[in-house]
Image (tube, rainbow, N blue to C red):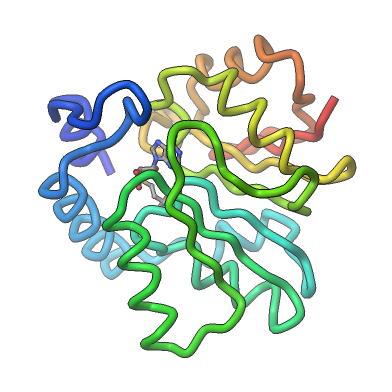
Length: 200
Ligand SMILES: C[S@@+](CC[C@H](N)C(=O)[O-])C[C@H]1O[C@@H](n2cnc3c(N)ncnc32)[C@H](O)[C@@H]1O
């Protein structure tokens, strides 16, 4: 985890104002490979997802889906009647998800390449939005939290973390502070590695 965290920080951001968080293709590929190795050596994703409260038939958004290590598992959880929107600003993320959809014939995932903090989804789309391992790097956290709030149902839930910044079994205080500063989300649960929030 730490490897690509450090890498992200050292990478020259390359796509200007609209997507200030975008990493280079090379860094993305390196990150995806590190994730595969990490998940092979210590699988933990299914165990994590079990804590999210996802049920069959739900609409889930994987915000900042990356190479989709959570996306396909989320799709299994929501089943055929549910749907997972996989959103990312990086074209390689969307290409990887498309490849997985084709390879495993997954019909309940819709990948969407987004620009800036505009997800393009309609208001109140999601039962659950998962923003996993992406929030600490966001340059305008309140803008992102507003967009997520817009696309979350009134009784929907945001699962958010500070994953690779998590230290000493604690979420970084900065993640919690950014959520509180936004004044639009209420933290309803805090575990060692994620926050569950509901719209205020
Ligand atoms: C460290 S990866 C995590 C991927 C995945 N969530 C996981 O945990 O395996 C962070 C991802 O968030 C994406 N990202 C960064 N800023 C974003 C934004 N503003 N909107 C959507 N995705 C973003 C990056 O392109 C990258 O694919």
